[in-house]
Image 1: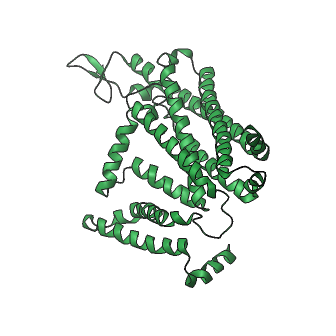
Image 2: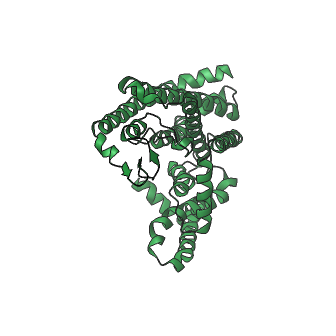
Image 3: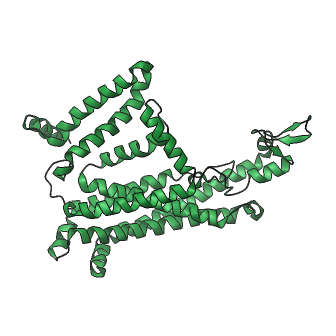
Length: 354
C-alpha cells in the first residue's frame, strides 16, 4: 500500500500541492475580505447603533428584535465581536453583523477535486499502468482517495487557520472576547467533513458516469433545492424542514456528515473495480447503474427546470407541470443514456460539432 501511494503521489503531486496552495491563498484572501468589512463597520458605528432605540415606558434600550440592551456601546461591542456564535448551528456560525462566513466556494472546489481525482487518471490512463504492475482497482482507489482526502483536509485546516490568523492580526484583541476555541474547532471539523463529503460524492458519481455536468446537477438537487426551500411540492417542503432542523443542531449535523462520508467512501470502494472505465462512449459506464441513474438524474432535472418555470403557472397546475417535465426528462435522458441505434447518427453529428 505504501509503495502504491508513493507511485500515485509521483503521478499527481503537482495537483495535490496545488490544492494546498490554492486553499491557503483563499484563506488569506477570505481573512482580508472579512477584516476589510469589519473595519468598514467599525468606521460606520452610527449605522449599527441606529438599530437600538430607547423605550421610554420601560426605561431601557431595545434592539431591532425587541431584546433588551444595556447601552448602545454594549450593543456595538457585541455586534463587532469576531466569530460571535449563535444558536443557529455550526454551519451558521457568523463572524458578526458585518459578514457571514460562507464556504460555498470551498465546497465547489471540493467537488472539482473529486471530479479531477477520477477523471485525470482516467484521461491519462494512469490506472491502467498501475494495474499492469499488479495493483487492484479497489486498492488504487483507496490510495488515491487517501492522498486527495489528506491534501484536502490539510488545505482546509490551512484555509481556516489563515483566515483566523489574518483576523487576529488585523482586528483589536478585545473583539475576540466572545471567541470560543471549542466552537471554532467544531465548526472546523464540520466544514472539513462537508468538503470531504463533496469530494467523495463527486468521485463516486464520476466512477459511474463520464460527464461532470451530472455531478453538479445532482449536487444542485441535493443541496441547493433543500437549502433554498422550493416549497412548491409537499415532499420538497418536508425535506427542507428536515434539512433546517438538522443544520440547526450541531451534533445531528456532525453525525449526518460522518455517516454520509463513510457511506460514499464505501460505495466508491466497491464501484472502483470499474474505475478505469475503458472509453466505451457511453455516458454511464456501469451498465447496471443506467436505470437508477436515469431516474435520479431525471428527478434532478425536474427540480431544476421546475423551480425555474413551473412557479410561473397557477397553483393547481404545479403537480401537472412537474409531471410533464419529468416525463420529458425521462425520454430525453433515456435516449442519451441508452443510445438506441436510430440515434447513433445524432450522437455522431454531436461529436463532430464538439
